[in-house]
Image (tube, rainbow, N blue to C red; front, side, top):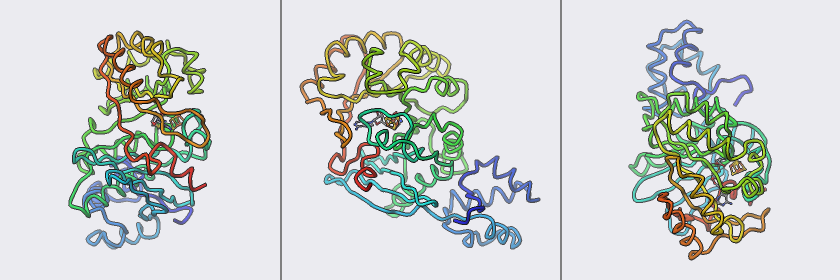
Length: 347
Ligand code: SAH
Ligand code: SF4
């Protein structure tokens, strides 16, 4: 892509209307372009056949629609997970995953190249931060997956912001991408089928509580005491549990919806009965659902995944507190489906 060229996928529908107005074109033209981008899903400006020739020329000279390029693809042996390392215009790479579960397709997308949060067990955290993704680079991943599915006569149903990066650290670009994905005249994904996962950035959670985007929120907890959480998740030093849980309560009350709490189970580290009881107590008055995910081992961390019986024990303690929980299958572990792990193998 030329350095000064526009990425049309960076613009929400109202933003595209403003851009076109600056160029002297009415909202009708913005609507036509929007249809080409998200209904027809063209892959070049030249395919926007019935636009006014002067507008077509302007777009051809100012904007590009190059789809993200596949650098590597890996498939899980069970065939349910396909993981892609995609190349951005500046040569950086990110991971995007297509998961199929009970016939439903989910895209797991990245929001940053790398991540600044430094969670010790996470391959992306071990890489450090390179840069934020633009809205268009986030939307581009969803279009990439949707196109693959359409080739098989299927459509995308769910999007999870659980790939590389911390979405609330890249708040504005992530939310513009959400607005594009849920636009009823665009991809029209149901907001309830979009889940944003955060390591627990309190200002971002509070901002989300104030805004009217009815997407789902997941908070990665991993520790139910400050001491335990700080060992695994560096931002826990900045926002202690009391502050984080207060923000979560504000969110559940204002938005009137529950929060998923993610818990990566690491043998002998955060899978003890003490931590399970502490978690039960912590979530007593929060509308919550806990997702337990046995660790995917990574090169930069010596921890091991919790074994099945210990997972069941942990879950049994949560049951005593009437806290619903699900053990998430480690789908596609054979293709390094944990966050950042495919990229880590390529470095
Ligand atoms: N930055 C956000 C979203 C991306 S990570 C967040 O941290 O929530 C998505 C989820 O994958 C998080 O719950 C994270 O803790 C988890 N995760 C990262 N590395 C993992 C690993 N090696 N094994 C299991 N879960 C992992
Ligand atoms: Fe970043 Fe999430 Fe990985 Fe932590 S778990 S380093 S916040 S991507």
